[in-house]
Length: 340
Image 1 (cartoon, rainbow, N blue to C red):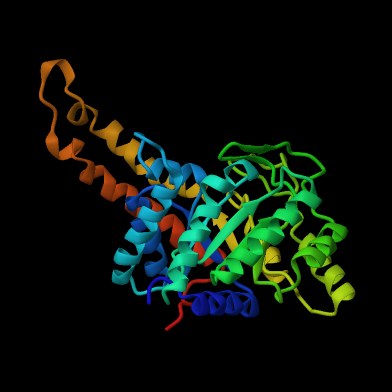
Image 2: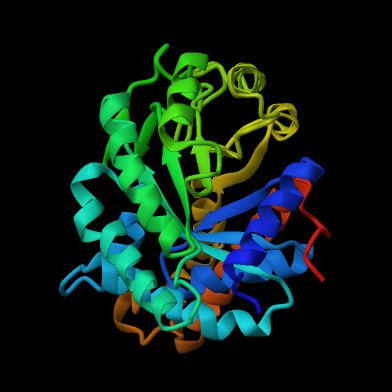
């Protein structure tokens, strides 16, 4: 099945952790960017994760009413149909959801999947993210407990972000400062509240200097070795080795060495959005500049339908983004690891 079942998704994550590789988690905002992600995974012979943020889901819901749940459900249903044509397995995930959007996004989507599971079907999404990084850790984990119980009942994995990632993501903004580093105490409190699998599986987005968006070298100091400290600190307290499945947020622009260190320390998922957005848009800009007198009706002329037909530049955009996805698979060591 091209869309992972709950059992297959767990197997994917287990294989990544054991093999010290990670799946690129590609944000999509349209059916075309979905195809680009699927194509990139297929060309790399890698399984992967397709994710939709609140802003992406709102965009997908259409500009007439901008309904996030409608957009997310529509894309997920579309993915269940078209993914069958790609010889890889993907999991569907919803990205950052802060507290003020839970009732309009994650909670209704959990209900959709709970209804499906009650009918003997698989959940619509395989994982959802709760972004409580703007809340106190106590409030963050309290809400996390509620969502983890609902997710586990619907055979869904929860992703939690316990401390801030710098930069801006769909309206959630954090300064770039010394608070961008999760402490061992933060990790222990997380394990105490959410357990280590017995209450339901979760992915942990810990902070080690990550920043969303585009940044120049020197603006932030990434410390992926910090993840080892978190693993060991919790292992010492609870007796479970390598207890966390980590997520690398703000990965665009990271060096190969930083990525490699993160993989060695338990990262199984790395988000990509900024780089893939650029890879999708860059060929379109090139096409428009090269064919400006065809895509525009200049000086009373009629233009050239073959150049302003959205399919002409859309194919270039898909190819550009797919190429960036294959590069991400190589960087994260997932190339050639698809489940047979």
